[in-house]
Image 1 (cartoon, rainbow, N blue to C red):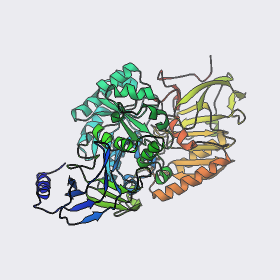
Image 2 (cartoon, helix red, strand yellow):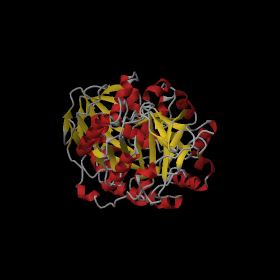
Image 3 (cartoon, rainbow, N blue to C red):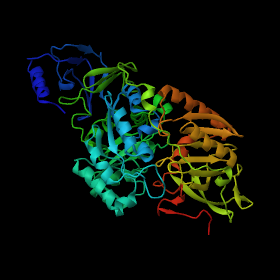
Image 4 (cartoon, one colour):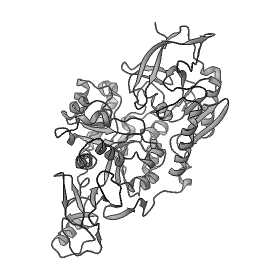
Length: 577
């Protein structure tokens, strides 16, 4: 927001009565309003662009024919999924030309409630990158699981006064939107703060679209087919096209992007692991991939800048033009989008991929949070799945998609208990409640992990983040789950009674107090070691594992209370009647 003095200084520079702070000359500006390239200089004062002209300035930079692109905006992400804290994200993303992220901290909120939200807010303060925090709408995400906290409308209301808090985050419980008054209060509070609410509409029909749009839910990142883009755009709902570490919708949705719909489409990463983030999967790469798949480069850039800013009513962001923030990057071409120099609010913040003023804070700052892994003691016998019939509902997974499917098949039973079968790719899946020591353990059969032996487990299990484990025998599964308690959360592989690899996530069992590089190194190691227990996987099994307990995405999900039929919102019997 500009001050009176900003207005005055801009007038003085434009009329020649005052020097500009900075002039960028000989650049090719990507104009997202007219979708053209214009070769104009730009003059900057107090962090804002005041015109397409060259004047006396304190500093002049000749970019020698390079492109000038507005800094990109990631419309929806979960900081916790990156496994690093906001200060470390600052140094990763700015160097790649990303200066704004819209974050939903509902992962840590499901574990720690308001304290978790405030931890993210505190760490996100005083950064060069803009971290817009949207308040979690669904803690827990449904009544089909137990989370570490419950946040009602009254618990969120005062948080709107916090710096960097923006609006209500993804509303994923459709049944609550339809029937629950507390959810209605949350939506109304967001509306009264002058902002729209974010959506998560994986099971919306025509009535669902109307309901969401009418209640001020104006975006959605759960679109998976082209008609959905059109249905949303007709109601003024923005589609956030998602390309993350596990879910990738760009290829399916690209045919729906045209002159009629593109202004209501943006990009997001949603959930992205540290190793992917460092190597490719920030929002810059999503734009790059869209261009590679045939989208017009300027249209793709517009979707990640002006469209995103318009969606969130960021009136002075998202364009290189007079009156807009001087936040842009300079690159050699519009297909690779490699940022040679990055400016944020008129200041040079990155050169050739290196941050000028790193913001990563000391590790000790993050070690004040308590251990959040608390489950009732159990043995391997407690993990066994008791069956009286061999014909059962089996959760079927597919790589590249967090949708799960209901398959019915026969399984092997011994002494009244399910026996894992590597030949038929049938493994045991369990979810252990880890917040209140209830002793709840959800169990079912899963296919698609191609496991031969051993077990893998994680404390990252959206959205309530109970401990989820898949394995071929209960003894290895018990060891995997209990090892997570020892390291305060993370990822682990166990085989033949031994821990062979792990990743420590000691902040709420979701994020690491270590550097991004250290986390990436651990991730590479654990991904390498997965080959010892899984046969020729073509997807990330830990990311897949993290999503198959999320009871708002069809068709079957497992939580600590049992196997959930998502479309009916009810616990179902595993055995087929």
